[in-house]
Length: 130
Length: 134
Image (cartoon, rainbow over all chains, first blue to last red; front, side, top):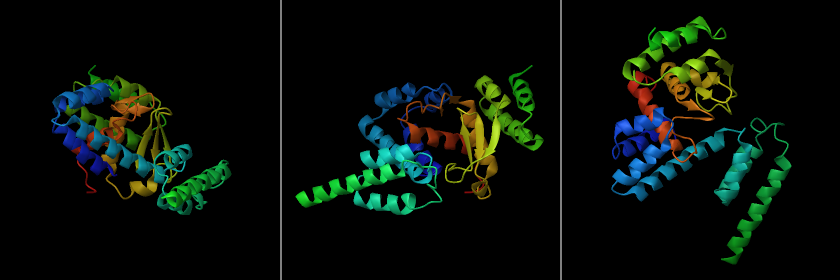
């Protein structure tokens, strides 16, 4: 998700709460103001929070694929959110096997590979059991 | 002395910044102050005094300009910087410096509103200086 797409989501939220409150939250580092405003002013707060969560997921995954330094986050995301064969293949092809990205700066590479193998086995097991 | 002059002095006191970059900071912070004169700039003033500029690895620094509040360092992705509106990117970075706290900026204290925080910063940046790369 690019910044402009994030701005589109923000515009959606700005349509339900006052700009003054958003600015107050922004310049006082206080996210409780926004959460409270959405909960009280939005016609459908749950849908709004789901949209916000989906946007967070999008933006975090974009970082995931572009920041090799966040290696721990990559592992966590694979285990927690991306345990699908397609994503694992993408990960192996584009990140693990790309020395330009990983290089020698990642001593945990062997351990990570074994984690991926474990997940693959789990996926295989799940498919077999269907 | 008014708040803006205090900020100009803070910018000038940082010897690691080039004169051209100091001028850019002054130009952009003046635009910000003109539109949001009620916002306290003391956080920005303290951080700009010790701000460092470094080239960032293009695989780590995703955006053209990224501010790391823990290190008080502005990382530049020079390859990306040539393809975007530098004024827009620097204003975005200035907003992150103004609202920096611990390891976050704006209202993204725990990641719950991360995308919204990015979006609001982008909206504010567009409002203040536009975006000529679009």
